[in-house]
Amino acid sequence: MRITLGVTGGVAAYKSAELVRRLQDEGHTVQVVMTRAAREFITPLTFAALSGQKVITDLFANSDGGDANLESAIEHIAVAQRTDLLLVAPATADILGKFARGLADDFLSTLYLASTAPVVLAPAMNVNMWQHAATQENLATLRKRGARIVEPGEGYLACGMTGPGRLAAQEEILKAVREVVQAQLDLRGETMLVTAGPTCEDLDPVRFLSNRSSGKMGYAVAEAAARRGAKVILISGPTALETPEGIERVDVRTAGEMLRAVESRFAAASIAVFAAAVADYRPAEAASAKIKRTKEPLTIRLEPNPDILLAVAKNKGERVVVGFAAETDHVVENARKKLAQKNADMMVANDVSAEGAGFDVDTNIVTIFSRDGRDLPLPRLTKGEVAHRILDEVLRLRGVLRSKPASYRGGD
Image 1 (cartoon, rainbow, N blue to C red):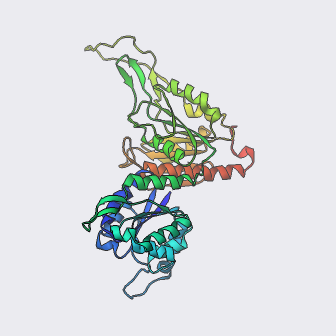
Image 2: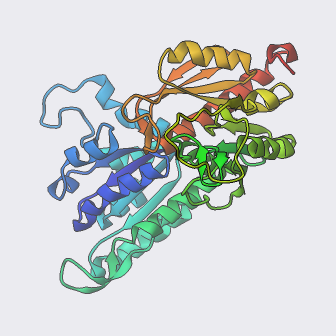
Image 3: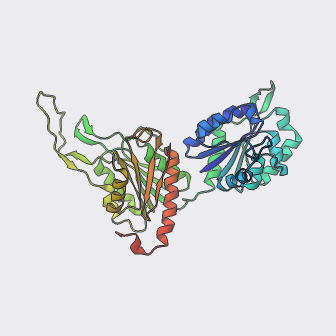
């Protein structure tokens, strides 16, 4: 989701820097808009470095009287159109008054009037300002218009007074954002099956073959889908990750166990995302006792594991099926080959040897290859952001597939 974070002039403005990171961790893209007063407390460079996005500080490109181009003059319209949620934290008494009265004398207040996105406001100010009748009247007006107000906390304030007025705890702000996002559930009514993590293929009672997958990408997809309203069944190999809230998790260990779990639940799914790093091979025979060390070379005979994606996608029907291709060379060629051979609708490919795109990191660099011929290369993003982009493509592609004749899908 694309969130515009408005930062206004108050001591609590520094807390918004951490809020940017927390929002990104939840899979959101964040663009910061700062008022002139906010820049007295924290620099735009801080937010630019954290968000990776342009920080907007003025209504016009040159606010000192120089030439301003047309693009900068209407930028508030462009930002308003691409904003999914407007969050202002901290929100001063001044900005609350502007929003309530329809004043538009800076970028943030103009954006508010131009946007139809939901609004979340987290006020922070002096206790007397908070309790003033004018502020309370403005808050009542904004609530009637549908704005979500995150009430300030109580305690010792920067002005030296004690009482309500300090910026709400980040968890309270994030909770409000989540609840507003839940009202925009584009996957409501869907059942999504997601595989994640590695598989472990036992060699003997103490040793096994596996890979470096942490499961983070698959878990990010599962969490993003749940937040967008889907019922999610997460079939997970061994990981140290916590189960995202509201998700049915099925723990498996081997590729064979994962295949059986997928086959028993595939019929219930409308979308299936195969993000697990399934071991390609397993020992032909697992020893019943620990294999003792000797001075002689040890030969282990391996046999292929089932290809889970190939096994189920051939009977996918109207389901949208997404595969993953972790590559170290010829990424594009291998991904397109797998897309066709495995009868998938999408293939998410990455070069796991690239910095920021490998195993057990919080970012990824992928290209999404779709059945309709669309290739979507993405920059380095958090895995949460990648997950949402994948889901966006799933919904887009399903619309395309439903507009085509049945033979277009192939392999059904």
